[in-house]
Length: 62
Image (cartoon, rainbow, N blue to C red; front, side, top):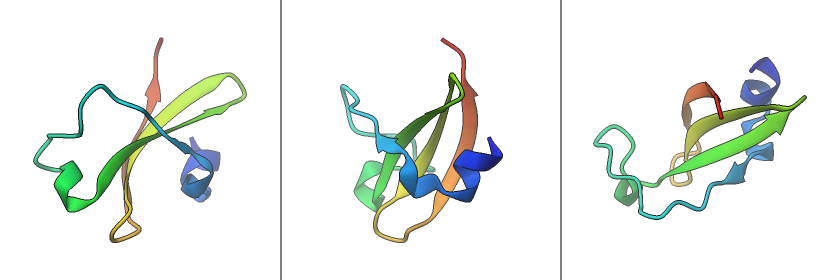
């Protein structure tokens, strides 16, 4: 988790079937969902391409 949080720009934008609609991270405001796999563990977070801010880091259990 710390590795992903220390350099979140190394993640990839997830291709989702629909744009983010959550009022906290709405796509219209610039938010996209990101993902990165580190040592076999997938981590997701949201990134705002308008402001450069990151939020909501979490482990993704598949």
